[in-house]
Each structure stands twice: as C-alpha cells, then as structure tokens.
Image: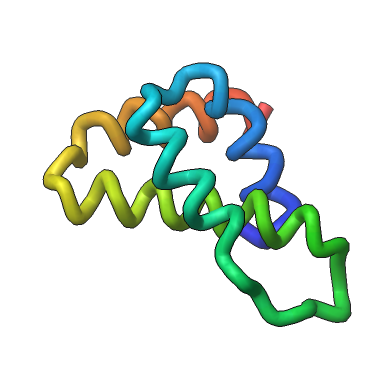
Length: 79
C-alpha cells in the first residue's frame, strides 16, 4: 500500500484510536520527512503517522489491537 492508501487508512481509523495511540500517530505524522516527488506532503505525513502507530503497537506487544485496526482498514478499503 502506498502513501495514498496509508493516508486513507489513517483517516479511517483515527476516530477509533485511544489518546495514547493518537499521541504516537501524531509523533509519526509530525516527524521531519524528506520531500517526495510523486505525491503531496500531506499524504506522506498521514502515512508516517499510520506507520508510527503500528510500530508502537508492535513494540508494546499489542498485536491484538493492531489486528483490530488492520481488520477495519481491510474491510473498508478493499470493498
């Protein structure tokens, strides 16, 4: 999934996130990124937030929660 799909996924699950999950997603979103020529910077910041969120969940051993969020993404973005 590219930045565009990841950005859509982030916007889809954002209302479901806990305060702690949102904090890590925002840390990833607000990180300094290099410019990408193929798409808008806003897409890459949202995509980075999603990646940071799933990295946090993995590092904390919260695979069940990651699975819940991933299932929502798959169910809604593959239709």
